[in-house]
Image (cartoon, rainbow, N blue to C red; front, side, top):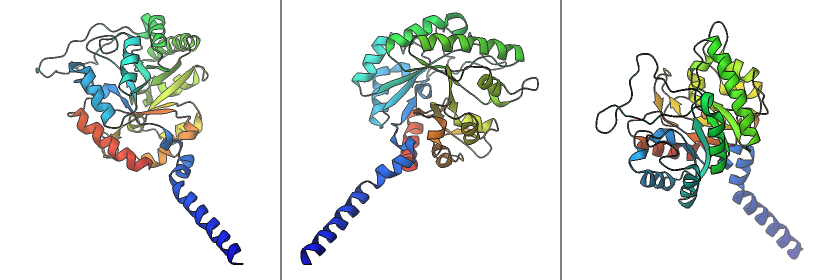
Length: 308
């Protein structure tokens, strides 16, 4: 009996220890987002990254970010490099390059807008940027050569129904080319896509008039909320369509971007639906922050708490 009791007690203790040790793993099974590395959208660093690409990206890695999404560079190309060079460089410093942003059409400032200023106080200058409307095959081929997995249309004209329809044509052509090249093509939203244009919602048109097998979505959670949409409702209506997310926060009035966890967006509820959304990667982003590294440090600290 003593031996039997010993075995029973030992078994119970071992099971208890196993359960305790695996509590985090179990929680991750119920929250797939907790299993994903935290990524950073490099547009967050737009105003400073080109001053010291190597140093700035090493700082990003040191903060605990493991994945990145490249964007626009004042040096042109991939922060002054070719796609293959950028891929090797980021791998060597411990960052997994997952996604790249491109324009849907030639860049134009919105009416009344001015170019942001650089450290010298003067408006920045950027080299001509290729776009999907005019250069989709070149952009697809370059991204594929670099080995990145996702190619994302960062924005596209949607001011009129004609513009929306033309943009949908460009997206469909780009998505087909990307698929042939082994890339996953996505569309990134702002809040304008959720506002009616001539009685129709552009975002709904984009979802309905593109092939869900070819065109996926990079849902910017904060811009969707600012546009009056519930991300969870979108996941339920279009399950599996959102492999990429942008994660940023908003003030109560939904007018000012904040670091993740510093505003009012209910990330716990949203992240709990990661599986239904089809989320594979998420990237912290903060458009033109006053202090980019302070912002992404706060976001990382708060995400660790959110996903623990």
